[in-house]
Length: 344
Length: 252
Ligand SMILES: Nc1ncnc2c1ncn2[C@@H]1O[C@H](COP(=O)(O)OP(=O)(O)O)[C@@H](O)[C@H]1O
Ligand SMILES: [Mg+2]
Image 1 (tube, rainbow over the protein chains, first blue to last red):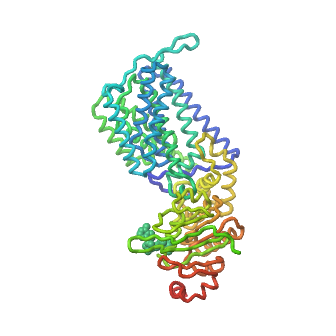
Image 2: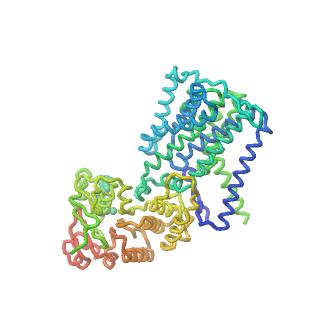
Image 3: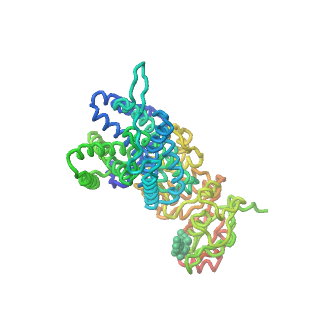
């Protein structure tokens, strides 16, 4: 086989789509098995890890969903949003408000996050999907800053710079036992179930014919238009789904941190998933979640010991661009293919 | 009596500054009438296609397709009505495999691409249709190769394949054999002839090689400096002295 050079910016996507055959069924099964193993490992983790690690893992899961939602726009559709935190924060404030002002329980709060993110995306998306490339990035950034300014200024509703606090998450009774939802392990499982559902939804949508059209739009949107597919409408739908799933992540982050804070909508929060996605690799479904997870984990190691986190970030970026084109997962799969290829 | 026109332009005009790329063009294409638009570089052939398929906005004039005014329609609406085109510079999905390119077009045709959680692999009918197209266009060996790794001529065939997947009423091909080798060129012409014979799709193509279109087109339209200067059967065109001077002169 001839060697094919690829640049980091242009991932190859030549996964064969065959009619169902024996081989196909086997790979589909292997994929399902891998997912089950991952979920099983995550379900066992809090029993092995201590409270601190469980909390860290909860945050990683939440940001993993957030990053995966971002990648429906970036990796699939080719739209680089610089304001995806707006929908994350929208979800966070929606869940906090619903739980505190309407005194509804945690599940309602989480769902409110999804609805809040979706509504906000449905509103801003109307404008954002009309423009391309750098203009899309700038417009999403502008809407992100708008949200930041609004939550910062509307002190009576949002608590301004103090954030909007929630204290009680209540409890559920499982098999006759009262479980405090605020308990790290209990909240971890609430998060795990929600994130698995959200991520599975994103994966299914990405693997559907709709996802195929999104990939085609990323590659050549003019071609898609001239095939008779309304590109804008597809982008809009992707934008709203991504917003809804970012909102769902936000619906978890507020009860997790017991606060919805303006910082959640800040452009640096948007930048965190952009960086995490590139770190993990946007061409693979789990790339963004893995990359963002690694980033959060590194941040937890470094901030305890040094105030130079931004410097560490800079070094990570540099290493990435220079040595890991395609991100962590991209590099791993490339290496794996090379090793397997030469072993034959 | 002649059959009604599939496509009709009236006074269609586009200028870039002082330059009139397409100048008051009246053209009617009837169903089944394979037409070649010829003319020297810069004659306005591509611009004419761009105006008709709404890639560009016309400055003046109107376009009707199957009786409907499409002068201000969107490109995707025009394509959906059955007016499909290929581009002078192949327009494909470079980072996707040949199979995925064709599949996207098939999905566009069937409209089975709304938001769902249905796996692509279960789109049996669409995938079978892709297999047919791969065979028909002799693309089976490259089915899983990314389009930007294909030879120039192969990439062109992918684009033709995508267009065929749409089962268009009218297919505009902008220099379909440009950059192809002799045998590939012949194969493409055979494919297009077969398509024309089959009916259902009317073909209009632009071409540089006059000999190539002589045997193939039933009608030849000659453009020069944005206008139509001759229009007739291949035999009539050969007779046309003005054409000799404007175009054929330098190829004889
Ligand atoms: N987008 C454009 N901007 C400016 N001039 C253009 C543009 N497109 C085409 N032209 C000019 O219009 C004329 C006709 O071009 P074109 O339609 O591409 O001719 P053909 O396809 O017959 O070679 C040429 O002189 C070309 O330079
Ligand atoms: Mg041209």
